[in-house]
Image (tube, rainbow, N blue to C red; front, side, top):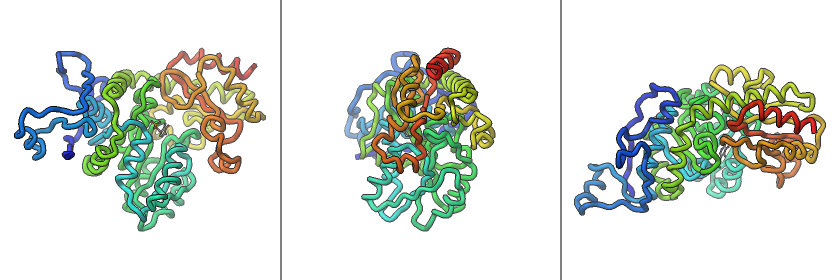
Length: 402
Ligand SMILES: *Cc1c(COP(=O)(O)O)cnc(C)c1O
């Protein structure tokens, strides 16, 4: 048995992101008078009597039942994330991909269609193309930022409009008001994967988007030590998604949950620093003679700078750039020459990471596919951590001069 666990609506956001990240969702006085939440390693939760079970089933007594349906620590994070995003409810998953799959599997039926802006996380695209198709769901991709094409792709079968903002790795910014408006006008629900933005920089629900998705593995947890994902939205819309999560079982271990809560404590100051580092590194690269192009929404040269400036508080730590006149091996040499960032996929953690998308994520694609996805051979993606920006810049300088 899995009881519906509708949570009370989160209070309207009144405090700053840092205060919320530290305090929101937590009981003031915790178990054992501890300042931190306990790690509750319980696969199951006990009932005092048969009557207690009946009371729970009849929803007279909210409480935990079995680990796959919820854990007290998970509830704390869910309340925290709901408040940070100004949403009614958050649902925590074992990874960002589990959250995407969880939403799609809950909302889509055979015969339904999904419309995507085409710049998107490679695995989201893969899930739609390879797997949703097996269940009779059609995916249509339109060019990122082409709102007319998105609207034109909507038909009677369309159930979901999906985009990232900023996109990965091109950092294109979606005009969330316009995107949400297409959904409202056509009666189709909208999802924004705001992993790269975080609620520090933008809150899509405030723009009328139905669901926000995060790979909490990235900025929210922030320390490259835990995988997690989250969906935030209205209680009513997320209720069936929560029920399916309980069946799919894509939940976090209590230890993971603790790492996520611990990581979130410093969310505000990390974002502030990563926004600063991203901007500084992007400006440095933009002025370097060996760089052909820099993709960063905080640069005036970025095609989406205007909409970014109007809707975002900062532009994050991810910077993508092209090396002038370099083939893929030459580009790889620059990646190999930096001394601070480590070569790795992922982003948003305290450690700076660097990678060449062609090698890291698109090596097995054909050149034609890479052209289609906008992944040139000379592209480098750097995720700025919280190191000193002067050191990151000096390091890039020596790598480019080498
Ligand atoms: C990393 C990432 C995901 C997937 O998240 P995992 O936690 O790795 O499953 C989804 N979307 C974006 C934009 C990401 O960067």
